[in-house]
Structures are given as C-alpha cells and as structure tokens.
Length: 362
Image 1 (cartoon, one colour):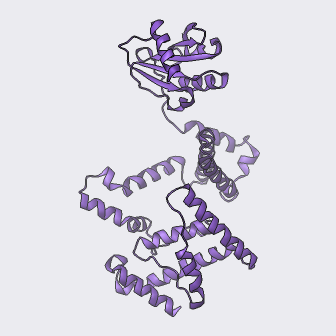
Image 2 (cartoon, one colour):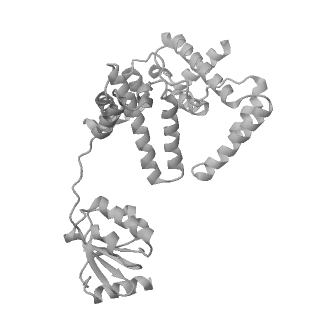
Image 3 (cartoon, one colour):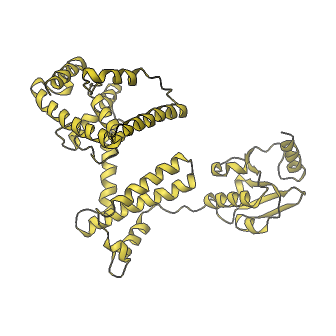
C-alpha cells in the first residue's frame, strides 16, 4: 500500500494526474484483463522486467492503435512519453508505471472476422501442386489427428494454459476445415454448409432465446430437450446417434444422462451375487462439488480398474461391451412398450416398472 501511495504522489507531482482525475490501477500480471473502454487514466504497475513489459506491449497492441500515446514513469523519476509502437524499444529498465489517458486512446481498427484465410490455405494445399501429404488424406485417415487435437485442447484447459488453448483450438478448427474441404471436393457439402447447419440448429434448439414465449412454454421446452433433438434427427430410438466408438466411460455417462431424461434412473439389473458390489458403490462416500471431489472419484475408478486388471478383465473393453449391449436392449425395450404409449404418456413409476419387467425376461 505504501508503494502505491508513493506512486500516486509522483504522478501528482509530475502533473500526470490531478486530484480530480479518476483512474484505474492494474498490475502488469493482469495484462490479459486490460481492455477498452476505461475511464479517466489507466495506470499499469509491475513492469519491472523485460518479459513483463513485453506482455504489456503485446496486450496494448491487441486493443489499441500503435500510434496511441503513453507515458512511462521510471523508478529514477524520469518520464518518457512515446507511442505504443515505440514503447518496446525506448524503455529503460526498471519501469515503475505505464500510463494511458482514455481521451488519447486511438482504437485499433478491428478486422472483420472471416474464415476465408484458412479456407483458402487448405484449398491451396489440396490442389494439384500442393502438399503431397495433405492431398493424400481423406475422412478416414484424419480420424486419429482429429481425436488427438481434441485431447490437446482438453489438456490445455486442464493446465489453464490460455495461450496454448488458443493454438490448440486453431488446430481443431484446421481439422474441421480439412474435412469440409474434402467433402466439397467430393460434391457433398462445403464449410459454409457446416456453419449454416450449426447456426440453424442452435437457433431451433433455443426458441426460448430467439422466439417470444411464456415462462410455461420455456419450462416445456427445457423438459422436452431430448425429445426435440430426436425428432429433429428423425431418430426412432432414444439412444440412436450416440457414437459407439466413444471412450467407454464417456459413453456410459451419455447413456445414463439420456435415459434419465425420460425418467429411468436405475438401468442396471443386478443378479443376487452382484448386489454386494452395487451396495459398495452406492454407499461409498465421495466428496463432490470441487476439485477434491474429482480426485476422490478418480481414485476410486483408478482402484477399480486395478482390481479388474488383476482379475484378467480389461476395464475399457468390459464397460464398452456392457454399454453397447445396454443400448441394444434399451432399443428393444422401446419397441416393446410402444403399445403402452410414449415416454411422455407414462409416469416415472410405470416406466421403471416396465423396465424391471423387461429385464426379468432377458
């Protein structure tokens, strides 16, 4: 606090601030939060080293025109006035504060967003005379690369690495553009079709945002979310459309979420010799609601996988086999209850009763 008081005195003494000025005080470590507009004067402290100064320079160049004037206060009391463009070359270390005045800000002319550069680049790579590797790819050969890029995005999120996340999202976008280019060459669809398709889908699935509706209608929309998606895709069964090639644990979670949306929560029909395992799982206390909860649940799953492997059972294959079999059986269950009415026409108690009866016959 004493350092900030001394800084304010220096700024007042040198006429950079007046007692009537409003100002915002930020530390250089928060450079990603520097944004427009701000009011009065923006004072950035903590730029004592070259690396931190460079981060400030990069951020200012992102949001302001390079000719925007700034004032720099050195620890030795020297004041340097320059433009953002000159800032990275003229500063003598260490810097006590970088000051910008709101009325002097020259807003950077923002480029209109477009996917054209990456689309044109991919087109060039795929044309005769382009890259041999890119020209040789098809939808099937790109599967592994797409999957890898998605996992790298997840890893960047887990590590809270924002710069890497930006790069990895670009890699995923490249895969989307790659597949769209291949499809366009085959006369199937274009990148514009992909963009239009997902835009129309999101608008249709959110009528409570894009259309006028009452609170009652809103509740009905949310309640019938899965039903609307199934109708939109013209799917006969609730679990149709779930990729069976998903990692088995993710596949299990998606199945449970979809089936619980119609009111069936207990999907497993345990035999008598399996019930002790079921009780052990349901009675185990796992912290929830935070990172420790994830660690606790993860440790339990990890230990369960170890025990299964010691018994000669592959956890991934066994769960995948169970899920695929469950999907088949649930579709058969749907066929069997069509005479009783739709899911909407049956109460939760009646649905669960019919599900138990179905499993007793299998």
